[in-house]
Length: 103
Image 1 (cartoon, rainbow, N blue to C red):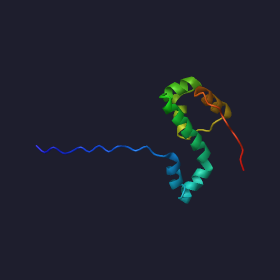
Image 2 (tube, rainbow, N blue to C red):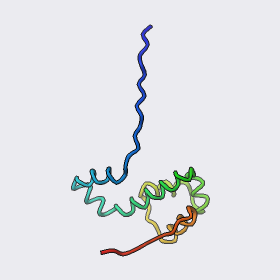
Image 3 (cartoon, rainbow, N blue to C red):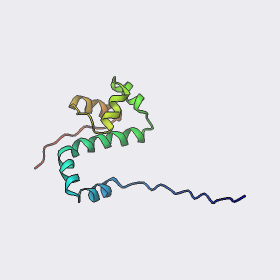
């Protein structure tokens, strides 16, 4: 009986900023990012906050008084955010919401 060695590959954490910088070199990615990038950044921050707190999408949805599917869309960047929703998310994670216009 031949026993094959099972090699387990360790998954490395991805540095989001480095990954993003590499992806933005592609002009089609850059165009999409410019159009939807801020929404995706917010979505990613919500995802990271939720995971850091070891909170499920269902639990976050319950606290937001919405459905889990809405949280999934939020985290995928497929849902527009109102400032009211963002403030509720900030409150849940005990964070301050900062919105600013920059030049």
